[in-house]
Length: 194
Image 1 (cartoon, rainbow, N blue to C red):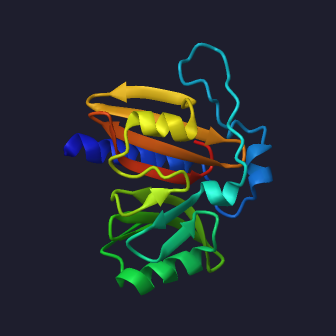
Image 2 (image 1 turned 135 degrees about the vertical axis):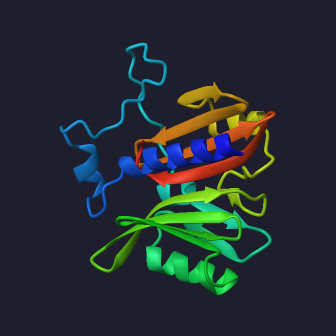
C-alpha cells in the first residue's frame, strides 16, 4: 500500500510539474525553455511523436452509468466541481499544495489550480469501475482491452507488481493507465503531456 501511494504521488507530481496555470497550450508547448515533453521512454535517442485525437474534448471525458456524470478535464473547472458536489456532497478529502488543489469525490480525484479566482482543471484520477473513459475502459478492464481501445502505448513499463501504459496526445493531454495482474487498477486523464 505504501508503494502504491508513493507511485501515485510521484505520478501526480510529474503531471503537475508539466502544467503551468494560466498559460495557453500554445504558450506551453511552443516554448523553447525545455518545458516540452520528450517522448523517449526507452532513452534510446529516438523521440516519438504524440497521438492525434479525433475530438480532444471527447477523449478527455469520463462517464458513469451509475451516476449522472459526464465530465471532461477540458470543461470549466467550477462547473465540474459544482456538478460533483451536487452528486456526492462535499469532497471526502481535499489536499492543497501551493496553487494546486485535489478534491476527492466517490473514488474520483480532481486536481486543479486556481488563477484569478478561476479553477483550471489539471487531472482526473479514477479508482472505481463506476466510471469509464470515452473508449469504454474502466477499472478491471484488461491490458488487452486498453490496447484494443487505444492502440500501443507510447510509453509502457513495469515497476514492481504494476504495469504502466501512457498515452500522450499532441492535443495537450495525456491518459495514464496503471495495471496489476493484467487489469486496470486506476487511470488518469491529465492536461499537459508529462
